[in-house]
Structures are given as structure tokens and as C-alpha cells.
Image (cartoon, rainbow, N blue to C red; front, side, top):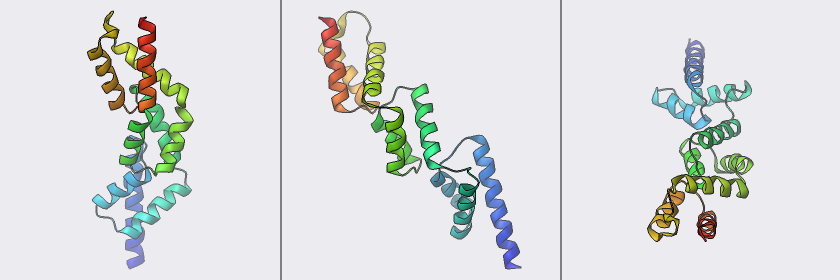
Length: 161
């Protein structure tokens, strides 16, 4: 009778994951958290996630790449912010780093940061230190490295001259 109960729990856990994945892609850690919150036992969660990996329905690398692509399309973000978001989603650091590096190299980071800075600049006040400080804060908050931020600010100053 216990085997039947375990099989039923596995099926319920799988069905729960299917519903969650139908809504949006999720990391393995997110699914595990949701199953724990619904009261499933650790062995059931592990078996369910293993089965979903076998079926190709859960892949943290694919999830991370899709997440990075989606976030860059919605909002200009640097690698620091993207890495932080992926960490909160439970994606391992090395997987997150690969996904970010694949999509967002140094030149792409610079182009993205420069476009964001130009979008926020209005009129001829680009040499105003307060405006440049505001742009610097924005870029740091969006997760761009200090090197990229400094390079963007220098470019804006050069263009002003």
C-alpha cells in the first residue's frame, strides 16, 4: 500500500510541476521550493526533479539563457544585476555566468550601458556633474561594472566636447 502512496505522491508532484512550467519556465531550485511549500517529502521532490531532467523539461542552463535574453529585451541590465536575479532563482553561479557571458560580452555591455545613458540624457546639460552622477548611479544600480560605467561617462564627456 505504501508503494501506491509513494507513486501517487510522485504523480501529484509531477502534475504540480507541469502546471508551474505551463505558466513559465522555472529553475530546478524554484520547482523544489514550490514542491516543499506544498508539503512534498524530500525523496519525492528529488525523484520528481530527476524525472523532469530526464524528460528535458528542467534545465538550469537553458532557463538561465532564456532569462537573460528576456531581461535584456525588457530592461537594460548589466551582468551584476542579472547574476543576482539568477542567484535568487536558484541557478548555480557557474551556470549563470556562462549564460550571461554568452549573451553579454564586454562590447555588448558597453553598448547597452551607453544606450541607457544616452536615453536618460536630455538636452545640452551632459557636462553637468549632477547629471553625470545621476547617470553613474543609474548604471551601477542596473548592474554594470565600474569599468563599464567609467568608460561610458568618459565617452559622454568626449562627445560633449
